Length: 372
Image (cartoon, rainbow, N blue to C red; front, side, top):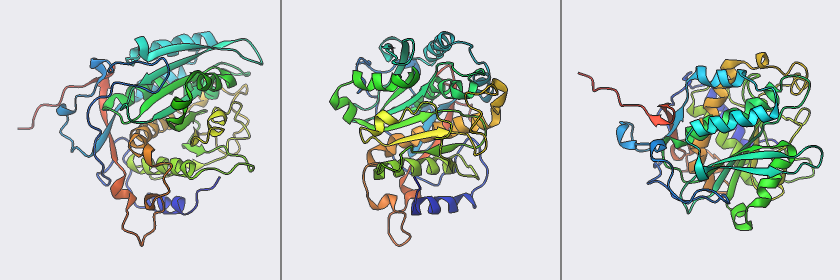
């Protein structure tokens, strides 16, 4: 699916913006979400506030109130996790369970779900939920974690699964308008099992689904996996456009590239969501000519470029923080998304500026002493 005028308009921005890998320039504005939330739309998820130790203390920040925040992990930590590939599916589940616990996902925030597999042995979904405003929607971020194929399965798909605990920690940078569900899915049946486990009303509250797969081969790429028989809703295009805006916030000089993953994508986690007319996006990094690599004998840890992997991580952090504010507008075909130079609505003024906070195990670091 091609983005039309919005893609062209966004790409013009990249020719004029400087490189700034972690913190964005103050070019866009929005109001920060007010107050912590106490509910979630995920079945069996917590009914109380997030852990106090993991909440953002916005009073410690001197940044203006229109800035949206996320926590960022050290680059060395993120790269090490991507390159430390567990050999078996059971070992991967253990590692992910431990990583989420370190990210303050525990108790009712974390749950496991048995998955029956039509094509092999049963497995387990691992779900961590970060509650948003009880009147908000739900954003689902998913990856499949099992080990299959001839190689180590570093790309397909430890690279996506390993990133979810870091993203769970990232969204703790401040209270969120939407509930975030991070789903480590078992093979192809995992997301379908989770969708069936929640109510019809809860499914209606899902505003977007983001699937991560095969990251770290190079520049971040994306696609909405509609076939030629399907008509994508406008919200799917808007979801892609918001990713391009997030790239501007990171200071990237090159935009994420629209690249079809159909030639290599072994498991399409977005399909059950698309059947419900939920806007979806696959974020990956497989360039044309490398479609043979995921799942092959060459799918090993050394295939992951640490710099590219961390840049994708930083972009996705920014994307989630920005999408949290914009998700309620995804399905609205309003002037904001048209980017018509003759209109008064300017997306660069309406979409939020996103930046980061350093953290140590999910806690806001002490503010620096005042300058003398």
